[in-house]
Amino acid sequence: MHPVSTPPQPSGRPPRRAPPVGRALRFLLGLVLLARVTPVYLGVHRRLALDAVLLMLGLLLVYSLLHVALSRRLIAPSAALGAIGGLAILVVVYLAGATGIPVLGHGAGELAAVTFLGVSLLVAALRADPGCEVMAIPGLLFRRRAELACLIFSPLDAWERNWRNRGAA
Image (cartoon, rainbow, N blue to C red):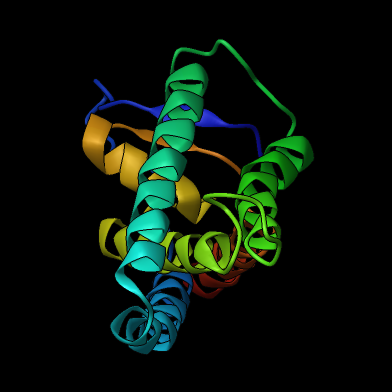
Protein backbone atom coordinates (compact mmCIF):
# COMPACT_ATOMS: atom_id res chain seq x y z
CA MET A 1 0.00 0.00 0.00
CA HIS A 2 1.52 3.29 -1.09
CA PRO A 3 0.71 6.58 0.60
CA VAL A 4 -2.14 8.07 -1.32
CA SER A 5 -4.03 11.28 -0.91
CA THR A 6 -7.72 10.66 -1.32
CA PRO A 7 -9.44 13.78 -2.65
CA PRO A 8 -13.13 13.66 -3.49
CA GLN A 9 -13.49 11.36 -6.45
CA PRO A 10 -15.33 12.67 -9.52
CA SER A 11 -16.69 9.21 -10.31
CA GLY A 12 -18.94 9.50 -7.28
CA ARG A 13 -17.18 6.66 -5.49
CA PRO A 14 -16.64 7.37 -1.81
CA PRO A 15 -13.02 7.47 -0.63
CA ARG A 16 -11.65 4.28 0.91
CA ARG A 17 -12.63 3.87 4.54
CA ALA A 18 -11.38 1.75 7.39
CA PRO A 19 -13.57 -1.33 7.90
CA PRO A 20 -15.73 -1.69 11.06
CA VAL A 21 -13.49 -3.97 13.14
CA GLY A 22 -10.44 -1.78 12.48
CA ARG A 23 -12.47 1.30 13.37
CA ALA A 24 -13.69 -0.27 16.61
CA LEU A 25 -10.17 -1.29 17.61
CA ARG A 26 -8.84 2.19 16.88
CA PHE A 27 -11.62 3.70 18.97
CA LEU A 28 -11.11 1.33 21.91
CA LEU A 29 -7.33 1.73 21.92
CA GLY A 30 -7.71 5.51 21.74
CA LEU A 31 -10.08 5.47 24.72
CA VAL A 32 -7.72 3.25 26.73
CA LEU A 33 -4.74 5.51 26.04
CA LEU A 34 -6.66 8.67 26.95
CA ALA A 35 -8.04 7.02 30.09
CA ARG A 36 -4.46 6.20 31.10
CA VAL A 37 -3.10 9.73 30.58
CA THR A 38 -6.01 11.75 31.97
CA PRO A 39 -5.11 11.06 35.63
CA VAL A 40 -1.49 11.92 34.82
CA TYR A 41 -2.50 15.36 33.55
CA LEU A 42 -4.55 15.90 36.70
CA GLY A 43 -1.67 14.92 38.98
CA VAL A 44 1.40 16.49 37.40
CA HIS A 45 2.84 19.95 37.73
CA ARG A 46 1.32 22.47 35.32
CA ARG A 47 4.68 23.02 33.64
CA LEU A 48 4.92 19.37 32.62
CA ALA A 49 1.34 19.41 31.29
CA LEU A 50 2.09 22.61 29.33
CA ASP A 51 5.27 21.08 27.89
CA ALA A 52 3.26 18.02 26.81
CA VAL A 53 0.62 20.20 25.13
CA LEU A 54 3.32 22.20 23.32
CA LEU A 55 4.95 18.98 22.17
CA MET A 56 1.59 17.75 20.86
CA LEU A 57 1.30 20.96 18.85
CA GLY A 58 4.81 20.30 17.54
CA LEU A 59 3.78 16.76 16.58
CA LEU A 60 0.73 18.16 14.84
CA LEU A 61 2.97 20.53 12.87
CA VAL A 62 5.36 17.73 11.86
CA TYR A 63 2.55 15.40 10.81
CA SER A 64 0.82 18.27 8.99
CA LEU A 65 4.00 18.90 7.00
CA LEU A 66 4.16 15.18 6.24
CA HIS A 67 0.50 15.30 5.18
CA VAL A 68 1.19 18.16 2.76
CA ALA A 69 4.22 16.36 1.33
CA LEU A 70 2.21 13.17 0.81
CA SER A 71 -0.91 14.82 -0.56
CA ARG A 72 1.09 16.88 -3.07
CA ARG A 73 3.12 13.80 -3.89
CA LEU A 74 6.38 15.54 -2.96
CA ILE A 75 7.39 12.27 -1.33
CA ALA A 76 6.16 8.76 -2.02
CA PRO A 77 7.74 6.34 0.43
CA SER A 78 7.11 2.63 0.14
CA ALA A 79 4.44 1.22 2.44
CA ALA A 80 7.04 -0.18 4.85
CA LEU A 81 9.17 2.97 4.93
CA GLY A 82 6.09 5.16 5.34
CA ALA A 83 4.77 3.03 8.20
CA ILE A 84 8.10 3.01 10.00
CA GLY A 85 8.77 6.70 9.37
CA GLY A 86 5.32 7.79 10.50
CA LEU A 87 5.60 5.85 13.73
CA ALA A 88 9.29 6.68 14.30
CA ILE A 89 8.52 10.34 14.96
CA LEU A 90 6.16 9.42 17.78
CA VAL A 91 8.56 6.80 19.19
CA VAL A 92 11.47 9.28 19.26
CA VAL A 93 9.37 11.83 21.16
CA TYR A 94 8.20 9.12 23.57
CA LEU A 95 11.71 7.81 24.24
CA ALA A 96 13.12 11.32 24.63
CA GLY A 97 10.53 11.86 27.36
CA ALA A 98 12.37 9.40 29.60
CA THR A 99 15.51 11.54 29.50
CA GLY A 100 16.40 14.82 31.14
CA ILE A 101 16.44 16.70 27.83
CA PRO A 102 14.85 20.15 28.21
CA VAL A 103 11.25 20.35 26.92
CA LEU A 104 11.11 16.68 25.82
CA GLY A 105 12.40 15.09 29.00
CA HIS A 106 11.09 14.44 32.47
CA GLY A 107 8.00 12.71 31.08
CA ALA A 108 6.73 15.46 28.77
CA GLY A 109 7.62 13.52 25.61
CA GLU A 110 6.01 10.35 26.89
CA LEU A 111 2.85 12.16 27.91
CA ALA A 112 2.63 14.08 24.62
CA ALA A 113 3.22 10.99 22.47
CA VAL A 114 0.63 8.85 24.24
CA THR A 115 -1.94 11.66 24.27
CA PHE A 116 -1.35 12.48 20.59
CA LEU A 117 -1.68 8.82 19.67
CA GLY A 118 -4.87 8.43 21.73
CA VAL A 119 -6.55 11.47 20.18
CA SER A 120 -5.36 10.43 16.71
CA LEU A 121 -6.84 6.96 17.15
CA LEU A 122 -10.20 8.42 18.15
CA VAL A 123 -10.21 10.83 15.21
CA ALA A 124 -9.19 8.04 12.81
CA ALA A 125 -11.97 5.81 14.14
CA LEU A 126 -14.63 8.50 13.90
CA ARG A 127 -13.56 9.52 10.38
CA ALA A 128 -12.99 5.88 9.31
CA ASP A 129 -9.51 6.83 8.11
CA PRO A 130 -7.54 3.85 6.81
CA GLY A 131 -3.82 3.54 7.38
CA CYS A 132 -1.72 5.31 9.98
CA GLU A 133 -3.72 7.02 12.67
CA VAL A 134 -1.16 9.79 13.20
CA MET A 135 -2.31 11.29 9.89
CA ALA A 136 -5.94 11.55 11.05
CA ILE A 137 -5.74 14.96 12.76
CA PRO A 138 -3.92 16.65 9.85
CA GLY A 139 -6.44 14.96 7.54
CA LEU A 140 -9.25 16.49 9.56
CA LEU A 141 -7.64 19.93 9.50
CA PHE A 142 -6.92 19.84 5.75
CA ARG A 143 -10.20 18.04 4.95
CA ARG A 144 -8.28 15.56 2.88
CA ARG A 145 -7.05 12.09 3.68
CA ALA A 146 -3.39 11.30 3.14
CA GLU A 147 -3.08 7.60 3.71
CA LEU A 148 0.17 6.37 5.15
CA ALA A 149 0.56 2.67 5.85
CA CYS A 150 0.36 1.57 9.47
CA LEU A 151 2.33 -1.30 10.98
CA ILE A 152 -0.70 -2.64 12.87
CA PHE A 153 -3.90 -1.35 11.33
CA SER A 154 -3.07 -1.55 7.60
CA PRO A 155 -2.59 -5.35 7.65
CA LEU A 156 -5.64 -5.71 9.90
CA ASP A 157 -7.76 -3.56 7.57
CA ALA A 158 -6.57 -5.52 4.51
CA TRP A 159 -7.39 -8.82 6.22
CA GLU A 160 -10.84 -7.56 7.23
CA ARG A 161 -11.58 -6.30 3.70
CA ASN A 162 -10.55 -9.68 2.23
CA TRP A 163 -12.63 -11.53 4.81
CA ARG A 164 -15.68 -9.36 4.12
CA ASN A 165 -15.24 -9.66 0.33
CA ARG A 166 -15.05 -13.47 0.58
CA GLY A 167 -18.24 -13.47 2.64
CA ALA A 168 -20.02 -11.27 0.09
CA ALA A 169 -18.98 -13.44 -2.87
